[in-house]
Length: 285
Image (cartoon, rainbow, N blue to C red; front, side, top):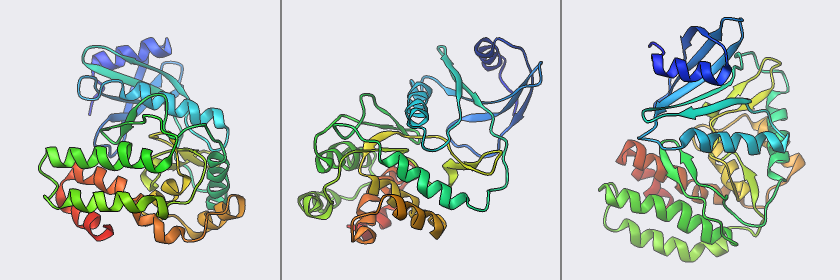
């Protein structure tokens, strides 16, 4: 992969320095990206995509990273800037060179995520919308978590699945039955600042061996939704959960509720990758 000339020019304007080298990163199904090096020898990470397909995606991500950085709880990459034109949108960030995790890596992450979740707000949601993967994520603020979870998380994704023929006819009735049960399922907790898309693919290791979070989908929500998400694709090391509990203990019965929270990311995967995830949704219901 080569760095498009227009993207390089946009990066050079952000950095006020010429780009002399580009090393593409592996993976990535939405954005292109990789390490760029300036004439002065500094390294940065660049991401770019189609601005018409994903309008304001990087502006929303930048806003999320700023919120996480302001919390000063867990490391996130600093952003040099975001720019877009009629075709491309570009984000240039601090380049975090992959390193070996420190011996207490998982304990650090558990304690740091608990500290992040202790940051609260008056309402669930956010004052702006953003993305979850390549899908819009609506964050219209609500006073109650159940109302937010139904309208901005489950219902939005369910409607999207119905529109694209990925949801069987009986699925809506099963969700509507679940909606009546949610007030008795979820504990009463204040909104917590969430990364919003926390799985192993969005967790890297900084130069000193410490955890660093990337690619957020930030909002204020139930912290259990974040912990449930970490368990969806294999889970994190048990030391992470133990350290989290030592700082900010979960209400009893979390393991019984985790699958209900994960209906949201499962529906997201139905809409992104097709009906193979539908069986998991049906199993939870």
